[in-house]
Structure formats: structure tokens, C-alpha cells
Length: 113
Image (cartoon, rainbow, N blue to C red; front, top):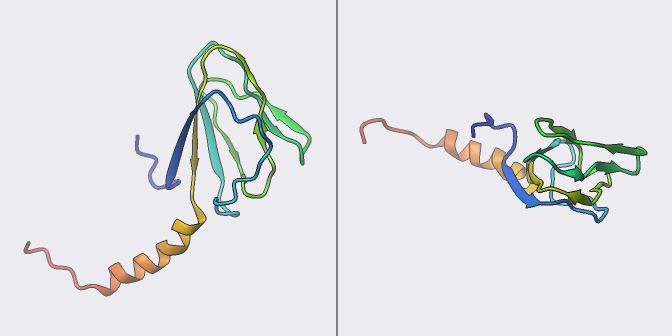
């Protein structure tokens, strides 16, 4: 899968995360993308209590959220099999990215390997 650099990390989980939490290591200004795959499940709604929202995510849909800023969880998957891909950017990696870019640009590169 090529997502063209939209995020740096992918977490894969079966079922759902029913415990309210913040993703402390995510960059607070970058969206995380949640994409469930599979078919025939019920439950697993994306819940954002600060906003008073409970969003059902169906196969083929993707939800974006600032998961470092918004407390969130999923409701219990009550039937079927649901795999969730959570695509995000770790803030530590993003902080280092500028330093890595500077080092790459400072180096003199040769094509005659």
C-alpha cells in the first residue's frame, strides 16, 4: 500500500479499543486515520465524548481525528470480525524529520556508485 507519505505509522488491531484515551505520542496537529476492514460486524462505533459524537464506521469508510487532542474509544464489536488500521504520525519521528532532512541536504551525494 502506498499512501504517499500521508502518515508514518500503521497500527493493526482486531476488534476495538473500548477504553477512553488520548494518543499521547501522536503529533497534536496531525490527523490519525482510522479504517476498519472486513465485513459483517456490528458495533465498533468511534466515540468522541468531548464532542458528544458516536460515529459508526462501515467497511470502505475512513475517519480522521486529532487523536492526541480528542479523547476517544470505540464501542464493543458485538458480532463479526473487524480489523482496524490506524494510520498516524508519531510526534518524535516528526520532530527528528527536520534534522534528518538537514543532514541529507548537507551531504554531497554522488551518482557514480
